[in-house]
Length: 147
Image 1 (cartoon, rainbow, N blue to C red):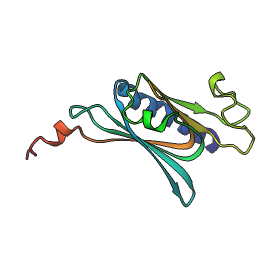
Image 2: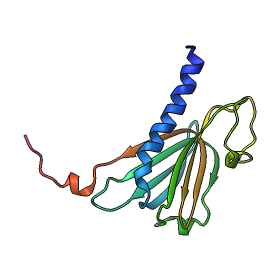
Image 3: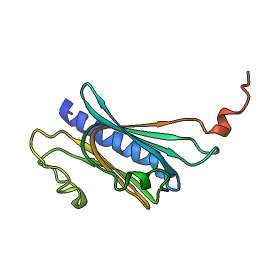
């Protein structure tokens, strides 16, 4: 297997793992969405919270190509009906129908990842990199250390 094929599979596998990690976040709330700029591009962090008995989750996306959040005030505190992570391959491979037209595709465009959160308010981001961070729940963090 060539390095290019392995790298493509790696991005696709990271998307599948992120989707699996985020699937239990249906019923969480979007605590906040933060935008930032870095030396090599821009970023967005989406903070998800369910309560003290579930772990908090932060989804960090960098090198943004498309961001849509609807009403910024409505996003904060909006519950999640659906959350998905999709792999968007480079040309000549096709994209899912609902991703077509989000950004202009060219041969220079790398493989991308799309995060979509649906609920009363929506978050839709296409980026080059996605990382999911989870923290211990407040309940778990409050337990005494053993040993």
